[in-house]
Length: 119
Image (cartoon, rainbow, N blue to C red):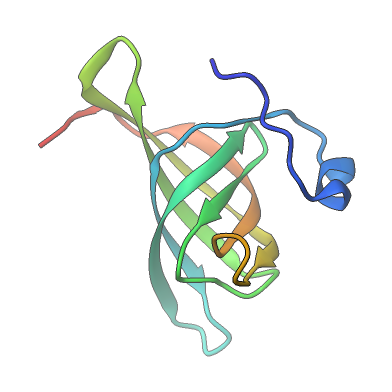
């Protein structure tokens, strides 16, 4: 596993109760909008841990939005297999600005979906 990735946001780091690891994987997500409709988005994980993740994305759900996530990660033992983690959670903070990629931090509880072959 990758070494822990220190978050540049000291406030978020202080609140974090679990270690995060720098892992890049595709994330498809949905969030519940104020009008009751589910909105879709995609992004890439910057870091992930047992209690949450940071997603770099052009689609930014509002803070406190309910999330459904599917994270696809390459399985280290077989490059043709993806490990898929499903999860639910909440947006905890967002980042938008010219100096760093846009994205959001979320708390989430994950479970393994089913390993699938690429392609």
